[in-house]
Image (cartoon, rainbow, N blue to C red; front, side, top):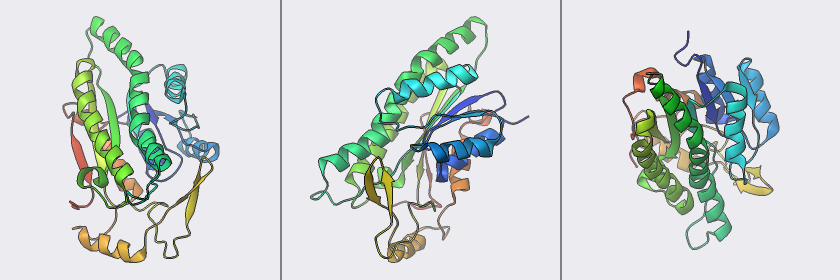
Length: 272
């Protein structure tokens, strides 16, 4: 049996990159996974790759009613919630004097408000389950892992919106650990450093983009910046999505039942 046998997990942004690897890792340990992605096709591809107890719930995590629907899918298909991973995200960078209100709100809503919305929507389900278990004389630990970034810990030029939101995620994590300890919920946070995904590939011409709800968002990193980043990482290389997913999975295992309210920087030794 896997470490997460019989557990149900919700993972946002699980159609690609780190989120996909998180969903696969949790499923490999026996969890049943509700897979979210903005786009339906990658969402369903992850479900197919899991090949077992997984269901797709595509859609924008910032949409009205998304959080309630996501939670309802978990309850309908798997009977409850044991693990929540707030992972969905992208960056939309600019220096502060050029950053628009749209850029600010889009990124802060995605990285900070959406995790808050999901945790708030999940509270009645988690609270009710904890009360039932208490009446039965059982203790069941549930796990929340919020994804932050080294930008939220150390700051990063050109990312006032992203850095502020990711710093807020740390505060949200520490607060929820205090609020939900009575439910035996462990709430922790991982702050990723330089992880190799489609958003961080070398882009010398600056023309690489992704389409997010009708917006063309530039992605990729200048090769010279990538070289500087590698030089600043004590381990000498970027992390892989699988390694990033492993750090999240660690915090969902029974071995982490007494770890809560913590921030773990997953950056190969990088400290800003």
